[in-house]
Image 1 (tube, helix red, strand yellow):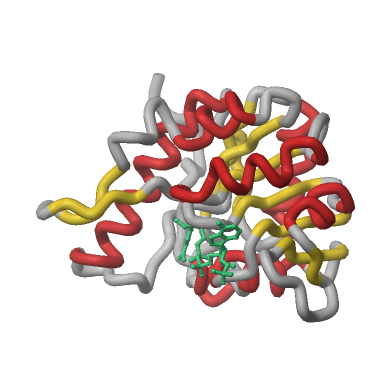
Image 2: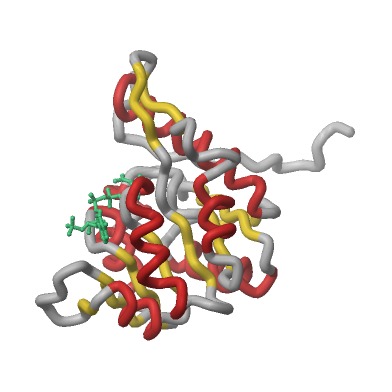
Length: 205
Ligand SMILES: NC(=O)c1ccc[n+]([C@@H]2O[C@H](COP(=O)([O-])OP(=O)(O)OC[C@H]3O[C@@H](n4cnc5c(N)ncnc54)[C@H](OP(=O)(O)O)[C@@H]3O)[C@@H](O)[C@H]2O)c1
């Protein structure tokens, strides 16, 4: 697939390292100067799947650039609407009900998928450095986008889990805040990812 990253920061570079073996990747940046870079609109037009890896606060600017080029396409929202308070990181009061649902409202012709937001960028380049395969949940309202993105998440080395409709992005953004809180203030620091533990026999009913 043609994967167009919007931004070329830590998340975009790490995920592209994981995905470039199986996919064609390009970066939409403000001042293209290297191979595989283009303007935001050029890369959005070229891509089959677009991955937003910009700060949440600049979403409106980014949407204005890409909106005409992403109709009918999956748009992965990897952003986290972080606000720092005296208690540590939390979800910005402006991001209600969730950043992803707001993005979907701004891109009504696209299929927004919330994923790739639940772990630090350092593990996106090579998830196999963790001792158990990390989980990555994905939430969206569109079945075709869900199928394509879950396959991409698996290609990036994660246990890809369907997490239902886009309204569940609220929970995925909260889950990310737990990771970010640990990274900033908790005993685990940045050196962990979430993983699933599966029952070996049928559970008690
Ligand atoms: N870092 C993590 O561990 C992590 C993990 C999961 C999710 N996230 C989320 O993923 C997103 C990206 O994080 P990151 O750590 O990769 O950030 P980053 O390293 O700071 O990269 C951000 C990218 O966005 C670009 N950008 C900033 N403002 C822009 C604008 N107005 N128009 C177009 N491009 C713009 C930057 O371009 P310039 O270089 O030109 O400024 C840069 O390429 C954030 O929403 C973050 O919350 C981060």
